[in-house]
Image 1 (cartoon, rainbow, N blue to C red):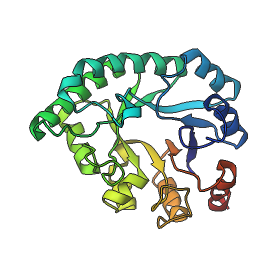
Image 2 (image 1 turned 135 degrees about the vertical axis):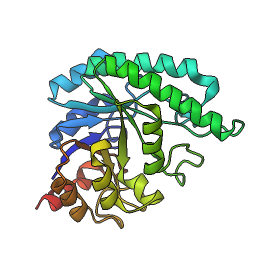
Image 3 (image 1 turned 90 degrees about the vertical axis):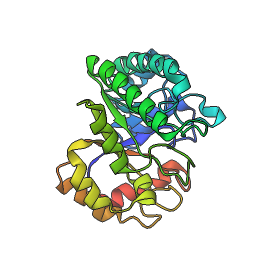
Image 4 (image 1 turned 180 degrees about the vertical axis):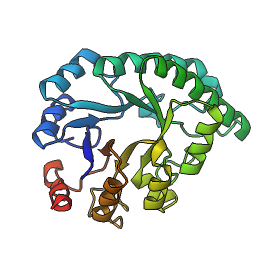
Length: 259
């Protein structure tokens, strides 16, 4: 069984956010991830990690006005200054939390900007972020997101992401492969993971349909996780799913797959 990290933005929501670190540790998790740390002081989060013996596996760059429906600003040509400021903020938090990788959400493609400009903006922003993060010893990840859940999301397929990474010319940009999003957009999970494993720095999981825990949908996670193990993947897999009931009850899938 690969190393599993609890996504605290989606799991243990029965308790306040800062209490989720304790809940994750009590459930047996050794690593955590979540969307954003920026609503809390870094030292408060670091204290939770230290107290409960947890590794901060991942968080995202600032992604605009999330509460207003924005899902990233990296492809928006009128937000470049804000994006660059966000890179600096992410480095401060990741450094304080001992987090060695951060994810960049491309965002919803702006309707009033042509595709070439959108692409060029995203590539330039990735180059900027990758260089700054590399200087701090942090990897940059980009994540394809399905366009059923987020219509218009700019980055939505693995081959698109890998093409953009190649075009940047950077050696500090990697693929964050979310199994749920990939299943919805392209399928071919096992073959794609095997083919691109050297460029995959992080995996996330949820079942489809519904984005619930493994065992609730069509993805054969018992087989797929064994396959990922057999490939020699030694990174984390973030449990980024919506529990069908209380989080603790939904964690039975882990023991079932490990049996």
